[in-house]
Image 1 (cartoon, rainbow, N blue to C red):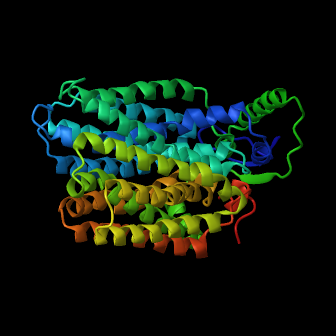
Image 2 (image 1 turned 60 degrees about the vertical axis):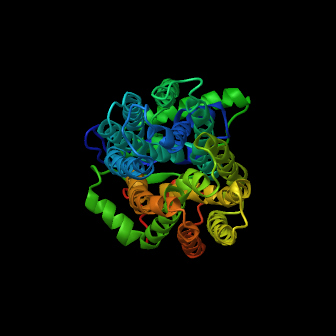
Image 3 (image 1 turned 90 degrees about the horizontal axis):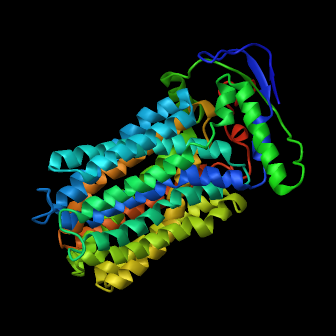
Length: 492
């Protein structure tokens, strides 16, 4: 139900509105409609995992004569990775701003289109500059996806399930990583595809899967929460009413009445000054938390994990074509973490689970570094150690996206996700590949141990920050966790 005390225009919302739509969304039981949201929005992370893993695993082939590109393996794992991440950071900021202004649905359609176009162009690469350019633009699209998708998911999924769903969706990246690892094995087999064709087909497959996702995504609605804040009250009420009728028919029972309303004094577009004031002045502790979580996980993954193939070939003499098998195994460990631990973030609680997953992964990585330094590991046992480390690290890393998407006000949600993603990923994802590419390829055990220890130290530091600053968000409405800027009830 929506009650207006003044009219609102589509271009500049105005007036006061009292609504129970957030409460109606949060009290919905899990249904087929929610599965449609998950599939339409969440499966793009599978494509991201497929993309990044494929590029890492085919780096050796691209640097070989006959690949069609005159690049070195170091350029692929270093420069290309840094450009991809730089594009993702800029894309997150650019599209994050537009997502808060023009709506979740408009932008998550555009960002996927950008991603698909750039991926298709990557498959047609004929020179290094072309490959580098479209890796940057692919990252630009995927960065926008992070802002648009995470904000939409959190606003559409009931509060009871929000934590586990968000974690599993972000963790599905590793399903794509498994596919990318296995796909690279086939693509690198010159008995099946010529050297200059196989790697191109991996990108073409990503485009094909993305088109399927695009067709499903057409049916994902706009966020009713965003519609209320921007003057589209009738559309929001009609959408939620339709969903309620659909779910009642599916469950064959009446839904309980929603409890709780919120009154907002709608305003025009929130400017960058308002966003900065909200992030740094109103919620400084939450800002420190978000930065710590993102920097820690970004260094662990972008700076170290994506150099795993180089470690295998350099220290254990695993063939280039065989690294995909090992990476598929650690990717499985990454996915199982959010899948099996996700429910605990909604039941045991955010603070305990976020801090413990970060601390456990950091401590276990220190132990792995010690064993590696002693020469106690081979390719198989190192992979086993990484599986255990990343089981916890993946759940923690996914919770970073969950955290920043739910602890800041509605009007700034997409931009907040974009800001923390960009800052954290730039710190670990741009500098990391450039610095750690040399450490993991040097052939000096001590250099790789140093890389492990830096990642472990930052994860432990982030875990300690979470133990003190994490917000009790489990089972709570987004509007209760962070009062909207336009709410009649402001944080005191």
